[in-house]
Image 1 (cartoon, each protein chain N blue to C red):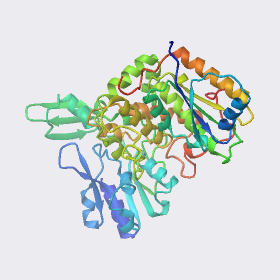
Image 2: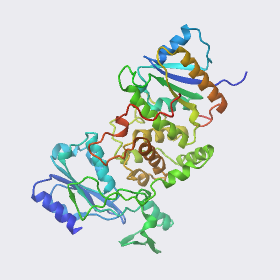
Image 3: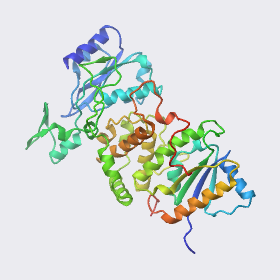
Image 4: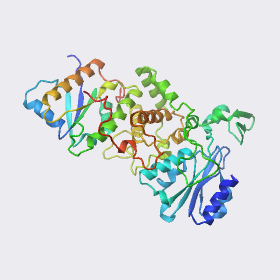
Length: 138
Length: 320
């Protein structure tokens, strides 16, 4: 069997998780490579979650939340955006492929967009190949 | 020195301070120790020179004695970077501005002991003297004269705020921002390397780390009650000096001080293994400045970059 990437999808409860749900009930096809973790808000994402996922062998991480202005908690995703803005260049700086880390905004009504995002992330990570850096015990 | 001591004496006489934190001569050559003056008699011990490398601001947040409990007003002698830490503390509401008296001293950079020992091939220095731009060291069977600039701490070589941006008293005239230095030279050079090369360099550098946490303990911006590496329920990262755990520790610590690091270089000077810890710190400072136009510890009324947001800021890193 050819190698298939394992991707952690951290989805916010109010938008992206519902978006994923909609993609499911609409029977849209998207790659089965993601494992979903539901969180209350994208602002809950600690950079440590992402690092831990890569360290335990996930090939990539997708974090998705509500569109700016749509946050259930009003400003959670704005703070999240600042965190992500720092995270990506730092990962790239220490030499980890930046595309392993992906962020997106998907609303509860964008089932189709969710399927597209997952397809794109999976394709991107397939291109980079399996993770070798930062994995514990390799 | 006399002027500094006079100023502190005056502060005590005017009853403006209950305690002053400064430096005294250390028990070893090229060292200084923190000095806590409760009694004006101790004022003549006070010094300030290029050996005063400790960032004294840490005593306001991390000291177990809780100095602010017994002392209403604390005076503190600061270099530029230390003053920026104090501004950060005021912004983050760790201390009240009216409860501290900031005494700025003109700083021309502090020396890094590790650099001196490199010059002496790790032979013990028994005598140390600094005269203008020259540093003289003497040991059992050697005597050396070194240009001071060669042994200055890396953080001082790229320092843009040598003097306190915020102060109550200043010894001499404070200089403003020094724009002549290329702050991010190392960062820019490092960025030019390829991805794999960068990873290899980081791996090599951080494999020296023994996880003593000296960098964290000495950092003025690291004052969480329980650090994420000490937390064990859940335990997020391993405690052994395993390379991936080590890199994650340094990277996360770096993200925790994003927009809060004042680049005092205390971490790098405290590191027993001589790891270039400033590289990551400078990188995050550069990112914060480019993206959010924010520099930590300058403006007492400005919110820290990571605790603020702007609704329509650049989000090029987010999938379209």
